Image (cartoon, rainbow, N blue to C red; front, side, top):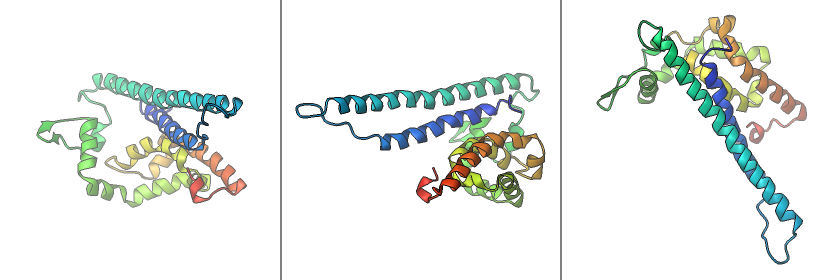
Length: 212
């Protein structure tokens, strides 16, 4: 399971989490003190170097996971499409119910058609998401972790790609996702969020502003 091409989408989410962390750290960094006469010579150097170091490290952790993962995903799905008799990614038929091939007079297909279908038909997509089967899948994944991931949902960003895969498929989410190997796709997000959530619960820092 962990070598599937869609694992790359989970890895890409680490870049989104790094972006959130960078924005939060930027707010925490003290403003650069003024340089010139009467200023503390040691403090400016420390503050400026810290500020510069965090900025340089931040973009690397944001851009690298996203670009490398998306690149690998596109290459892998393209290669797998070569061996498919339909000439497309093998899982695309699961989403034909929402896909739209007409994009302002231009014909589109594949992932763009699915994305355009969701964006142009939000009520249809929401109605498909709001089902007992989807709720059953969500509760079934969270219950073994005592719902601790909800205390630190930042890490649940890793679960967005597999969640959309399952919830937006033609059959939607159900108990089979939990009992079969598909649940492995959610393990990284659930484990990391549970560890962080447990620490937050122990320290009593589960206030709303500390969720992210």
